[in-house]
Image (cartoon, rainbow, N blue to C red; front, side, top):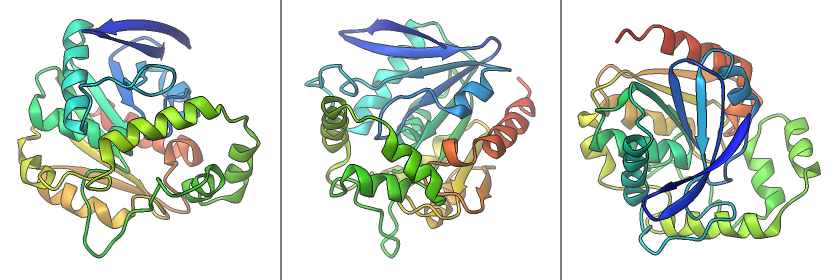
Length: 254
């Protein structure tokens, strides 16, 4: 994996990437950008690019970034400026919501869309976990179904500055309404590329039931659910997720 810094319009962001072949652009969740076992597995067959959202990590929180819609427009600019085309766009959690917002705006440079436990659509009788109220330990315990993943996360050193920056950026994007856009369900019909939904059956942050409006709204969308898996499915069940992703992406003809 290689790291670099790129400037998109007025913002400098960090990029992590590895591999060769057709491009996967992976958008991270509220916890920030990291190189996960899923990225490593996918990079065997694909060029995997993982950008860090503006305002996350050690970058300054931009004045213009007031909503996930703003972040979606930023990534449309990134696709243009980096000259990326036929991109397989994948997003997890907050990144999944962002990926959906990108796709309802413009799919010209996209070849497919994969939403992994995306935020963005709330159901009145299925509350989200309130990530803004949890301590780092509580957040870890809600991320995973299997306890050993929780203990491994808690053993990792915490960079308090990065943690607070990520929380501040997420709050700017998703504080009110909490983790969703009430208008998003009305525009899902604009997504005109092959779409896959992936979810952990035991997701304690964005419950699996939230997949239903995405399936109803996106024509031809496929879905897969992973048993005994929580919100961090790209870590907890990365082998099964990679297998399902590879099958989906290889089945798309251009």
